[in-house]
Image 1 (cartoon, helix red, strand yellow):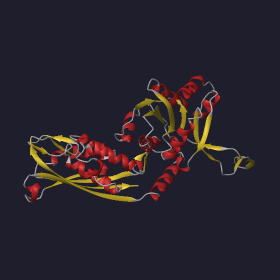
Image 2 (image 1 turned 90 degrees about the vertical axis):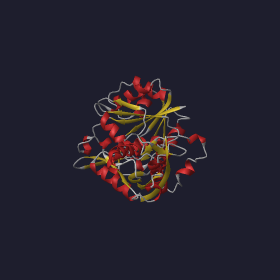
Image 3 (image 1 turned 90 degrees about the horizontal axis):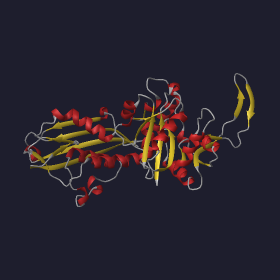
Image 4 (image 1 turned 60 degrees about the vertical axis):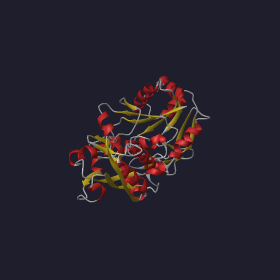
Length: 379
């Protein structure tokens, strides 16, 4: 079974104000779009993620996602339902049997909501999360009018989940004008749409005050944690030298079971330490032949995934490489850029430094290279 996530991020977000469309605005260290993508990336049942963007926004979207692996981008239309249709068209032939359609402006998507939606699709053609209306409702403008009976009224949220053939047919048959809700299109086509419990965390970011409240809520609910990582590898003639995800030309390389990237190994241990998940050896034991010669970027991706699954974000990583050679200075900028891409954070949240031991010890004798890293995360 193939389950696709379709994230709609083609709007301008004029009501929020500012220079950027709201889906690319920072919230707690990453964009609203990145928050939404992460919720699907860490869910084990989601097999593909497609993001619908506005015309000319691909560079903005790529920057906002910071190297996250998605299936691709699709250019949307002038109305939301046209953007959804463009995304559905792009999924034709992908093998998707179910699809979850989500607004990027709802950055806090609990895994439990996705679980409830997918379970509901076992019986219904579609499903959506909703909350009961609890405030008093009334007609009026400058003067208060009659109250509205709120019994049976629901606040509809996203993502909305559908069997792919049902929602595709619903869009193809739609002739009711501008539609703001996929579930109503499905109902109009005669399909059943189940209602599951929504979540207050799924509030939509529309105005500046919404963003301020979301930032405040995020700050109040999270703590700052740090982790320390240290690693050392022996230098050997004829080995490849990998440091910070880059292959450097050098007569001597580092020996180890994987690619022996001592810098990334230290970063991985720092990340794992910050969430109390042991060390790199407990996740990728050197006795396992599967990891022989493996690129250390795989270990970084694993640590980042564990942090994301806990709802955490990486605030900063500070790396120090200890060696006599090669000289790190000429490669420092490229190392920061590579580290930022692997961690899916801004380059301003990384630091790469180098030092020597003034000829003392194994690094001073050019027998090996050591590295130490400190990771700061918010979770």
